[in-house]
Amino acid sequence: MTSALRIEPIPILSDNYAWLLRDTRDGAVAVVDPADADAVGAVVDRRGGRLDWVLLTHHHDDHIAGAEAIARRFGARIAGAAADRHRLPPLDLALSSGDRVVLGTGADAAEGEVIATPGHTAQHISFFFADGPALFCGDTLFSLGCGRLLEGTADEMFASFRRFDRLPDDTLVCCGHEYTESNLRFALSVDENNPALRARGAAVARQRAAGEPTVPTRLAEERAANPFLRAPDAGELARLRRAKDSFR
Image 1: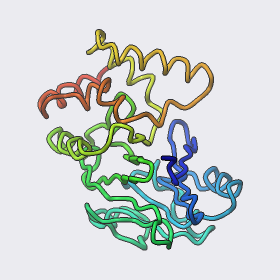
Image 2: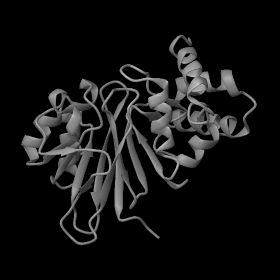
Image 3: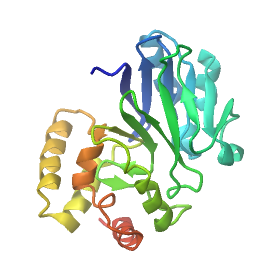
Image 4: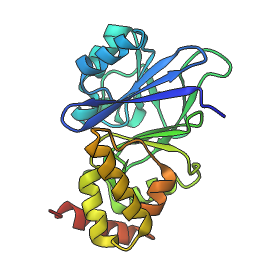
């Protein structure tokens, strides 16, 4: 069945992505992590000039810097983690794990489930839309990688990954950065004989040679090739993260 949710990556800053979501049933539009209001606003204008929601995964400036400006410009509401509201722009909707964000007003409007995903930051959240299906995971899970443990622990990140276990294999992983090539180099250094990883590497080379983004990827691909998501326990995840932090 064709999804009613249309998803578009918006390249911003040096290697970030904001994500534009449109519910084709009633035209409702949201954007995830719009750090560059001008770049994102230009895309919103080209797509019809409607923006209903600004969804924030965590408090870092390269994810939230443009949120207030773009919300004012289009009359959108801002949603983010209730527990992190002191570090976010003023929230119209303060969210906790298990809450829902409804894009439109119809009975069948697209809904995003809030999933607590601490690890990169203490109050990081992700949004899962079953209509995609699509996961907007900020800096928790990357294509072939994961976020640095800046405020959280490997135990927290491992638990965050386990919350993704129930999501379907065809879930689109819509992450916050174009880090796939560097993540690939590290992944091959620790799992070079993995055929799924080698196949992903060949696909990444083709995408980048064509000037295309390497995301979104599918959760099935990450389950097969991402060494961090494949880590059997928090101890191994911590070892991999330390190794990646010093990898050159």
